[in-house]
Amino acid sequence: MALVHSDVPDLPLVSKGKVRDIYALPSSPEHLLFVASDRISAYDVILNNGIPAKGKLLTQISLFWFRKLAHITPNHFVTADVDAMPEGVRKYKDQLDGRAMLVKKAKVVPLEAIVRGYISGSAWAEYKKSGTVHTDQGAHDENISAEQAAALVGQDLYDRISRAAIALYKTAADYAATRGVILADTKFEFGLIPGADGKDELILVDELLTPDSSRYWPADSYKPGGPQPSFDKQYLRDWLVSKGFKKGLESGPSGKEGQGWTIDEDVVEGTKKRYEEVVRLLVE
Image 1 (cartoon, one colour):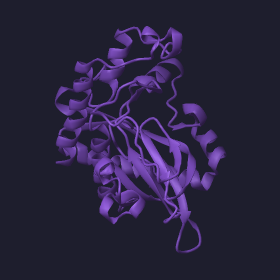
Image 2: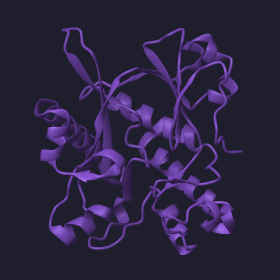
Image 3: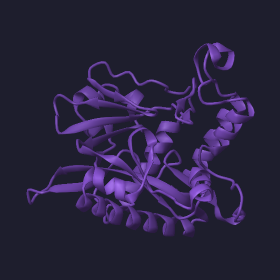
């Protein structure tokens, strides 16, 4: 069964995202609890049913990359061992084991840094239309230029984020290539915590290099100039479109059968296999 909604009533729920539920820890106020559910979204819409074990697979991938890239940029990860977490978490071990992370609380930078090694999807559409490929996102996933991003967060912080994002991408892409995988693009999120020198320290937050935040392609089937087989959610997106999905018709009386969109079981299984394949190729 998929865990679509976590249930940790002893802890205050801070936010509920497309995939992650974030809880405060009254006994450890400098930390947060991140719980990766099995929810899945496409085109910014959360589907009715989830992908069994998806949250555990995402957590496994993020943990791998947090550890592998920590020498480039520190991150918010503290532990994924539920037994090492506060009592308010440990009592829910059966539910949380494998999908929960204790993380440092940080001031999130309001910018998603996107790094592309290959142009595809919306970036390719933008490039064909205007000859530009903007690499950062503003509010509501709005594409903005580097100049706009620097104006939003300040030039110094933007430069720090830019250098870190490119170094992270290059290192990850080089490793993925040794495993027969192309990391076409990815997005990073950053936060600030007080540093030992009194200055804000830049750290990675949220997930890292998962199929939800990245495009992974099998290298042996790559052919320039067209769509690529992928290990990300494109498979699910293509199925939705084939079933008549359009933005604005995702739920409510105009949605599929008036009940939003439910993924067919064979597509659930196909999506799960793609996440499992990323783990097999990159992590194991």
